[in-house]
Length: 329
Image (cartoon, rainbow, N blue to C red; front, top):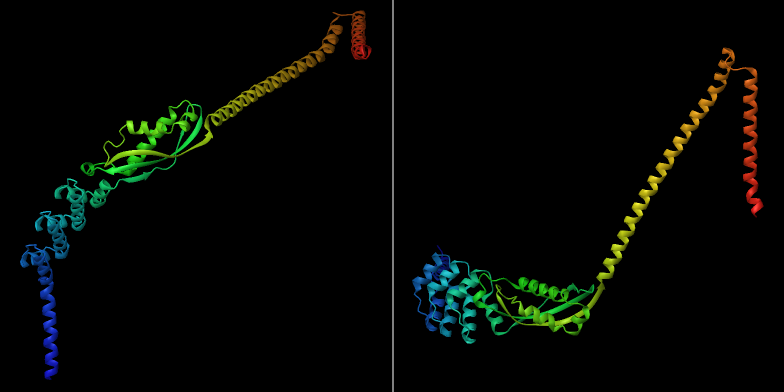
């Protein structure tokens, strides 16, 4: 074998061996830890590799904690990492809390982090309160006028209630409830426009931050606008509904009247038919009486005279009825 090829193979093998060696034995990280005053054994770092823990995720935060004088241990950080927590964020939060004189222990910070909340952001909010702007809340005063209110809520994180405490959505909902209650209990919308601090006092007096992860410092009314006249609109809609009901009832009565009229007409037609039928039986009865000798010829002539006299009187009565309006004119 060519000596040059042998040398290249030996060099490649050495590089591979050194890569595998330094992968399991992170000497540079171990040296950095020793230089920073962190006492961690090389075999401890190897054991982290075997437990599928990235040593740099533990050692680098440990270096920061040691420099800050937090007094944490490798086991605490590693157990939090294995539990699925963010070790670097927890250490940063502990350092920030120490600098701000906020009492916060590692176990508490780890619990907050594992609960899904940003513990570093919570510490920052404890030092620098945050302003939450509510959406425009519409409420109606007793006089029926709509009032639209926009509020800004200044909150500070309450570290003791971060685990199990409600979030920003609850605070916004409670503030909106307080706004609706205040406006709804006002006699007139002008009272709200003249004294918008009524809303702030009512909301703060209710203790809306109870059970939440925040402490409400102040509530400022940013904007108050007058909306629609809801009372007049409701009255208009009620009047329109009453009109439709009245129209429906009138239509029902008209339909009943038309039905009764049709029924009366049917009865009149039926009665006329019976009269005609009865009149058609009169000649037959008279003929039968003549044949039977119950009525004579003179009786028949008297009947005809009476019938003609009745017809004449009826004609004269109709003529007098037709000429009476002309005489009055």
